[in-house]
Length: 213
Image 1 (spheres, rainbow, N blue to C red):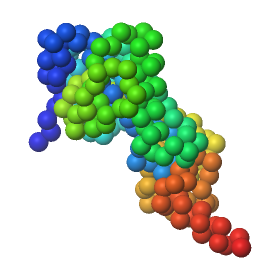
Image 2: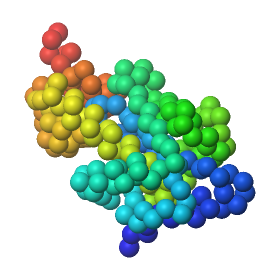
Image 3: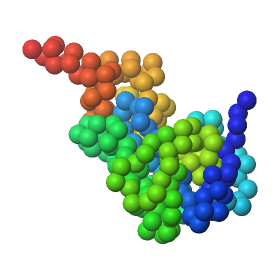
């Protein structure tokens, strides 16, 4: 049974005086290639957004349709990206924190948020009170909205990158480790947007280095 996210936590925080609560989530941490994207979103807690749920439970067309609805109804939202260079240099966890901070920084340019609810993570160096919610994208409506915004934005980026690196099929698998992606990685080696510190990419790179000796 799928439990749909609610505004329960947002309402409880509003009763405590936190009237503008942002949900934060990321997309792309599990991929072998491409950026990590985070989104932060504030929703009116009286809004009717019944279809909004964890982006992984929705089809691409459902996410895209919901994105249009969300943009009309949100109080505000922000998107943060980290590049492949930053992921390779910082490591995945620190890079993800950076994407989340950037999303919040973008949000506060238009919205005076007072509290942040984060899917699973606690964000270091964030200038707002926050709470990490395990499975937050399945429980908290504002986090679910952020997951849709982040996923849709990242998918769009990967479609653009597919045109630069068409041999890998990024438009289809979005950089995740599917059989097709791993096969193309073996054939073509790693490209400029692959995460060099991820095992399948590192193994291919190491094999290429040995073959060139």
